[in-house]
Length: 346
Image 1 (cartoon, rainbow, N blue to C red):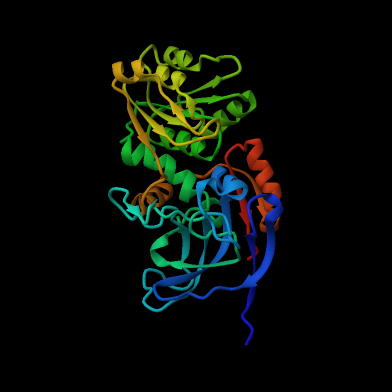
Image 2 (cartoon, helix red, strand yellow):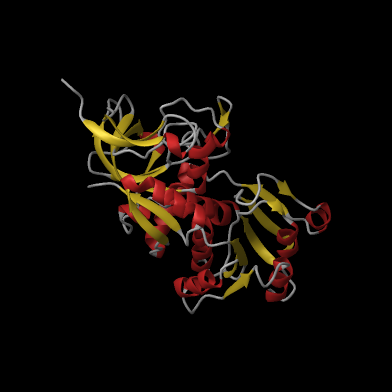
């Protein structure tokens, strides 16, 4: 009997020209696995790089990209008992990292979905049950799909490792998915928020998003090339407690903006693939620099509970049909305000 077919985005090699919306067999849930009907997949900057060049991963073709899904369990394999059919779930990005310290597994860290592990841009995905978490009850599938990387990265940086407190100041760079989650989480914790952007329009939109009760400052980088000095001025010379570093490259302005004993979470590689940190402010200010590789599943479970308790709503710039991945990747490259999501047919 022929197996049931589904649609999946498949790479036959690197580059957009080798990406196709193909018809392939629906997978089956093996021992310890579940079969998920995918309802939404949010895109990350990383996904675009994987399509273009693998982002340093050795991939076996054909390969399906994408890491952040929200969907429902439709079947369970032998020995799989964490979920039952009908349960709403989201994926966990660093699959082998369940809690505690990050460990190297077969030369990789976290064995991430969407490279080097197979991705989720398909109608159905079969995966081990521990690679999933329960979805928030307060979010629909499109909203929930934004949590696995962008949401958890911000949460892990500020709440899990940063122990964010009310009255502190958080600086985020830009208005992408991680940055806006960081701003929302900071505001929800009673912290002040500083956002840097080269778009005054996006800064104005952020004021409307966070509400009048939040102490928010926007720094337009076109007007303040030395934005670290402006952050110092806005904090009365003290500096910021937490900084989410998205750009990479020369971190002179980031070091300037941080207070004595401040914390820099190294997250992004938007402008460069290296971090150049001036030694003098790093040493004299006793600054903590923490690399962030998203986070473990226990922290994702914590984030889900916090989202439901805080009634936090992710910021979504645009939702595309699953078949419109090329247009969604173009939008991602232009720089969205929040997240880009692909919706799969119900």
